[in-house]
Image (cartoon, rainbow, N blue to C red; front, top):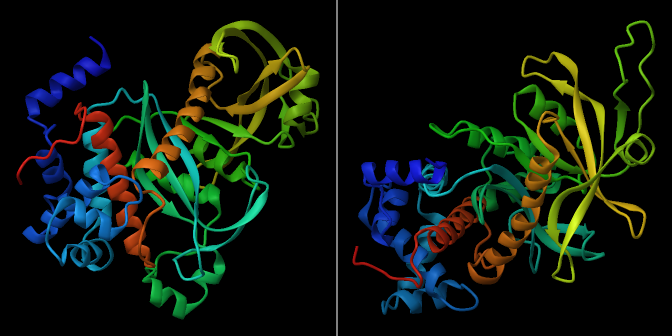
Length: 398
């Protein structure tokens, strides 16, 4: 029986809810007050059924006739004391039970902002846009399955000007334990938090790390802590070629760039898979790959090296490499590695959909807790809309 079939049977036996009221109860049942549970459900309704911009006023007008509803929604997401991590754990459990999870994907996400008061806002150069924007930078982790990816965890990047300014921390209600971290650390933290979820089977981590200044710490720690990965990396990343046979009496080869290693020592794999080209017609992939020595760092601090694999699509017409990927799963068939790398396209599409239709960019508030709660609710609304089986929003009485 397929993994999806097993999960469906398990869900039926456990009575896990597919209705909106049941879904809301699973997410918010841990909240101590009935009014908190009610406004959590209302917020989800607003995200799912309000067309266009998901402002608090427009969501309130969509879900209720109460003249004070927008203030209640504002109170719920920004000021009401509830644990978004508990709700995320319930979301992981609900989504994983309905998704044939193949990988965990990481998505750094730019959230444009006006002004300078939203928590974490800063000026940042965005390579894809070729310009500097005023924005927040969120990092999401998604459960990726066949045809669907569900965000289940978030981190907010805080530049030092936010973490080192006590007044800014107080105004934004940034917890004492939260400090400035590089992007690789956010990614690792998301992976470890998801791995700690009871009953969840670890999956390979897939991420585009080409914009990360130093990806080596992430490579070291993911491998050293036992996580498989397929990471897109910059062509200048220095790597040590794997020798063709053990050379105990010789010095290791000097490092070369990832691009050089593929171009000079890579093996061609023609026709390893079929894909759809930009013209909409199927075409065969041509791939170049090469083994490489990679650094590992265990939780106890012991350093080691291991054999990984570097690969990239080869564009024979232009005689050039496409996106370069690095993995610590060299035993996997190339077709499997390509399928994992291809999940990145779905991750990008998911984040775009969250922004266009589920209110990802519409948070009204300046606080750190409010940002995390809004992102959690956006993720939950998207998960329900995608995985519940409902063709259109259908609400039951609470």
